[in-house]
Image 1 (tube, rainbow, N blue to C red):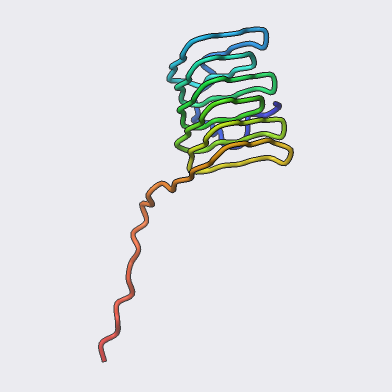
Image 2: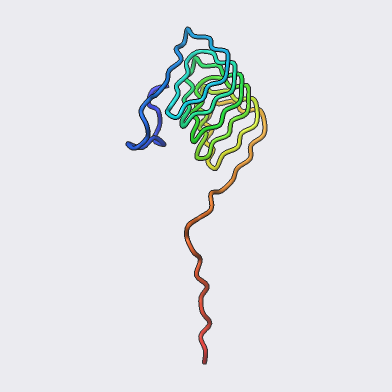
Amino acid sequence: MGSIGSMFSKNTEKLGSFIGSNCHFKGDIKTQGTLRIDGTVEGNIEANWLILGETAHLKGDTVSRGIIVGGRVDGNLNAREIIEIKAKGQVTGEITTSKLSIAEGAMFNGRSSMFREESNVVELQAKEKVS
């Protein structure tokens, strides 16, 4: 997949868990850090950040801050911040996020719901001039 992407700042946690390309895992995964998958996972994932390499295949649902899809997902993705589907990425399922990026060549079959985080900016109404 090359670089992880500009969405990861210097403050983002380092890679915490890794499932290699020759690995097939069945079961749910829950981790506080960043999880990178290059193999096959059958189960639901809860992680801070999820990175799916080009050889990854996820069969299950995910809840995360951010998700990068370089491989294949058959399931629902829910990210508080961003979901990015790379050029070779394939997603079949529902997506819920505040920011969505789909590269040219990517496949997305399903439904997306987007929400906006509440802004901290207070709108000031212009006071009418009194003559």
